[in-house]
Amino acid sequence: KTYASSVVTVNADGTFSITLPVGLSRQHGSENSAPDVNPARHPRTGKSKPSMSLLGLGHFIWQQAEINIWKPQFVKNRPRSAFWLASRIDSTAKSIRISRLMLSDVLLVSAANEGAQRQTNQQRVRFASENKKRMVAIALLKADATAGFSEMQAGRLSLSSPIGFPKLKVSPNVFRSCERSFQSELNAWRAGHKVVAVVETEPPTIRFERINGRTVPIPEAEVIGIALMRVTPRFIPVDSGYEEIIEARLCEQARSFVKPLRFDAEEDTFPDFVLTDVDGRESVPMEV
Image 1 (cartoon, rainbow, N blue to C red):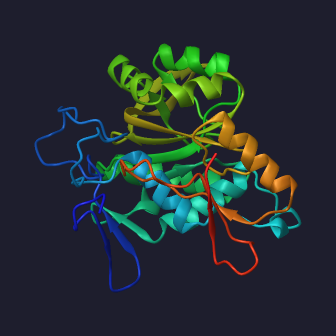
Image 2 (cartoon, rainbow, N blue to C red):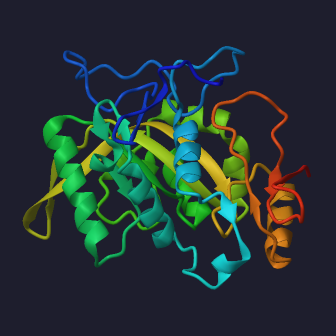
């Protein structure tokens, strides 16, 4: 009930169609017009939302990819690294349509210096540039928060392993909007905690620079919205340091649980965790 009925729909082929505040396709005649809405987070209005914010999109992807679920056997399986996260996000994006595009067509995720994802990111940047499509980038904020925050203030967003990404330019207005909406997450980042950014950009453009006697093309893109999500080392989203302590303790004690995600809801009655390993019970809500 958080959203109007048309915001999230299930298609006949099993994919999802989602409406964002700012679509991924440029409207004709809007080449030089900046969006007049904040796509990162909806204001609290008490009404059904006409679109899903970037924060809601992050929560949707986490839920569909089951990143918000933890079981003890996950410790023995593939470790949850930044590249594991990128693979899960990229796979899930292949089932999400936005503005008649598959999200995977314009999605950027962390990549290694060598590997398929680097080439995939580069191909998607070229596609978005040639077809005037906005892009979505989902990755951890740069680990060095001191340098990363200074770079944001200076107009550049630095993400973790942004191999194949365009340079992400941040205007003072977008930076201030991020500070207003996600101060708690910025503080957590600067205190050394992991924070995921869900970013929407304008279509990439190519700028040419003279480097070492050669003319080099430099792709860059203007950021129009940044949503932030604090996560634990296992990429479970948490809203506070207290929740992070409990999440760590549950994992230490080999418990199974789900972290409910709020999307753009305004209710305050979501449990912080849902235990799924209590004998005789399908689930037990847990509040910190």
